[in-house]
Length: 491
Length: 74
Image 1 (cartoon, each protein chain N blue to C red):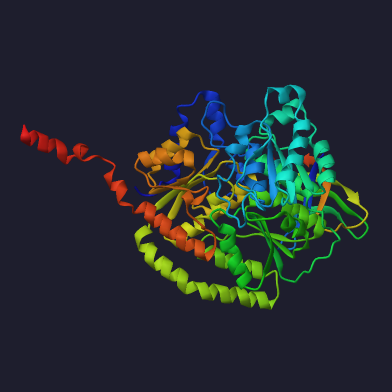
Image 2: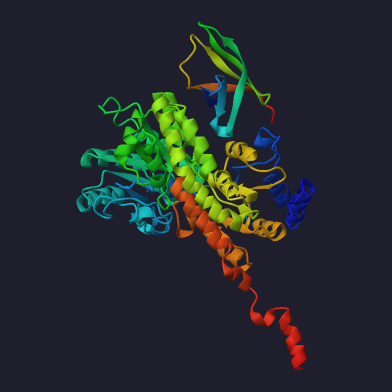
């Protein structure tokens, strides 16, 4: 099927909305749009960051997921207590495959679930005593931890525990950083507010800890912010930043440590990958410490080159030379990758529905492979994300915000993309429909996808999925059209 | 009144950021931009107008301020 025209896309949206009751239809209509590159502000065409409609299947998470799962979780040498009932912590540990180096349980703790396991009596009598006891116990059992964060689950906010007081007292006792994070799940409309709360907690409790202390700095100190090292992403980015002469002094927060976070204000430039989850802290550091920040994109060679040159523009000729050297070094490798996979992937159409930055960042990587993104959408984006997306997407492509299970299915049925990239909850639905699918939250257990090394893996994975012979075997032999004729012949 | 942040853009202009509304836009004009007075009415590219109490001197950018909405397009 060829690409839809603007009118066709518009009528597709109307058709899909048809099944909703009047009120829900009106609300959902605001979240679906046809991309128009002429629009400067996304506000005019799409509404985002609003509460999901009750009764529809949304894929969003909660504030706790945003703080514990995304921002704080990967900080490897701290212990993150999931303060509240046991489930939240259990289902948010290690699921994003934030890789790290270290001996888990000795000096790194990112994959372990620490929880206060609330029972009825804790709800009735409050959990502050329990929290204090847990912190003491942690200190005895895991003395190599560098700090503790208290990630509140819903009940903490509901019963009004004073985790700040407990944290302050405990911090004095154990002489380490103890960060209370008020990221109760009911706050906000999605995990997005959790990112913000986590950023604020870092700002209030961590960032200024080493102000005024000595730090051996170089003029080329940068930080990687908003890279969660999924499948080794941050490592794949770091390797050529260092190759071009920069010194990466902190990774936030994939494979990151507390010390790195505390040293971040000493950087010369903050490199921001995930704008949605960490722009808050970058803006804060720009104001307080005067550190400029810039967004970059390390998906696909075109975008990498663009980003490297923009990063180099902040520094002297040394780095500019370094950037050109790195670009030249990897060019033949990238050309080989493209030469190998482009003929196999050329012209294929992709629909994405992910969170954070990927719905717009990976577009460049697909385009490098000759593929086209025909629909994209975010789970929890704000208007500023859509502002940035509109320019990246082709005209008359589909944009969907907080899309419901039903809508996404219908869109896919009508648009018939060659590949869908979304989360695990969508994966099996589309695979059963016979559509190749990649789980784009944690790279379908593959990765890294960032950087030059990542692009080779990205291209291989897309080819592996799209050209897998299994998609031709969705119809069992006895249901193939040839089969009935044979039966007739036999009869 | 809302918290806003004003920062310099790469092109040298001023950019207005209102986190509560995810509003990030360029400032077209600023009422007072003198050595001894800075602030007043800010006109944005999207047509909106916000007011910040004039400061005695141009601040070091970026700066967080309290702003009043005078007129917004939506």
